[in-house]
Length: 354
Image 1: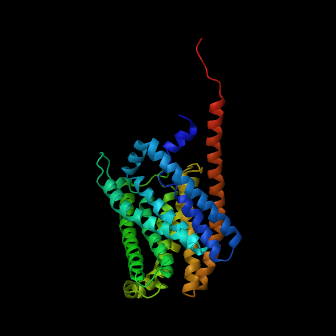
Image 2: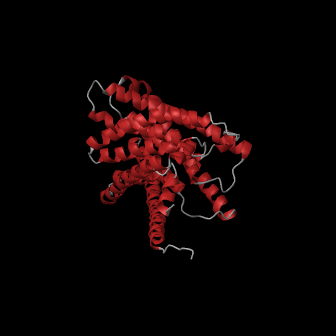
Image 3: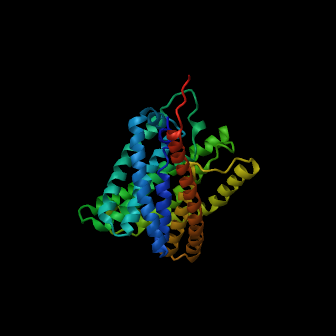
């Protein structure tokens, strides 16, 4: 098997986090007025989105057994929700650029995938019986289910101004539904992951960057909640507007509390236990939360007139851009190595026994 085919066969199910990370950093840059760099990242996200769909379809056709195994693996299955979140994040970025005609189909696709994945994937995971405890395999990717729900809520807030009066209440109801489900899922996933840590522990090797999603899932709830609060009139939105407005600040504060904990865990993993810091696909699951926290802080600072939050968001955005650039370059290096190894293997002379 050639290196490219091997890479496709073992393509991690959460690679759409690259689109999520690139898209949210682009959104953050757009919100602070850095349009040129924001546009560059937007088009990079578009290219990544198209390429990843092509690779995933190739993998589903030629390496179906690998895909089925991932869908049934409790440690990997929830990463497929990155497809939903990436579709919504890209749609939001395109909508901010006025491309609502392109963004709307993405929101509809994300909604359909969210409903399908939301019922099928957890069933596959929770009903798996392969002799290993399910709870012992809970990890940071489980939070992506909550992220996908919140991303759909944000998509609906972007779509709301473009729908007619008849459709507006339904869009508002779906936004509130997705936000509420996302919050409840976050609480459930946090409980399961915490129980895993308490009962089974986590080794330095197991504590990968995907655990940063624990913070990113709350940060995206802040952005989604702020968007719902600012939505136009609809019965469902009006009923929950005061509640959501009161909770988003609490969620943001908890994000701030989580960041030193996650940084400390990284020090424990890489400096104290010498786990090598090298490129892995789950690094994109760290880029997205940092970018999402920046976007949430900027949004909260503007919407609730909290200048401290806005300042924190600007600092976090600088960090997010730096982390994105490092991970993006590392990904390109990894991809170029795979292509180079494939080309070299094709030109190696065939050895025959005489």
